Figure 1 (cartoon, one colour):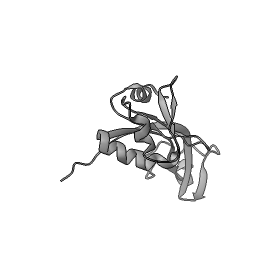
Figure 2 (tube, one colour; figure 1 turned 90 degrees about the horizontal axis):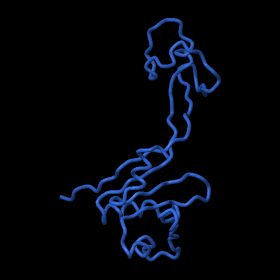
Figure 3 (cartoon, helix red, strand yellow; figure 1 turned 30 degrees about the horizontal axis):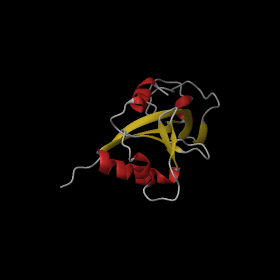
Figure 4 (cartoon, one colour; figure 1 turned 90 degrees about the vertical axis):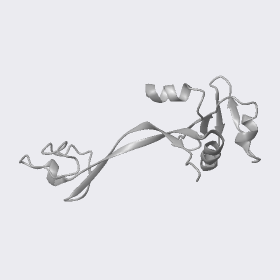
Length: 147
């Protein structure tokens, strides 16, 4: 985990949920301490949240994500969501194979005239795309003010 994301994960004032994308992986949740946290997370569901004491987080089913976020926004006013993402780059073969310096592509000249190294998926003469490495992103969700 990136250092700033690790600092958010380790703080204890604002709830944090880590969405994981692997098959069978559960959500990981850290909440400010409250002796009622297990019951609050379970929310009268059949499954019971699993406390991982050595790592100080809860594991809950992925299907609970939306409900967890909504209820955390109600209870705490905000929640950090850490989730995997892959940045999509967009360019075009005409840009990558260009000879001059003028670039009107969305890459803003980053790939202009560099040629294609085989990592691009060419959709058409005017559009190619590729996905970056999997990374983690974090966003702070804040409850909307009522009224």
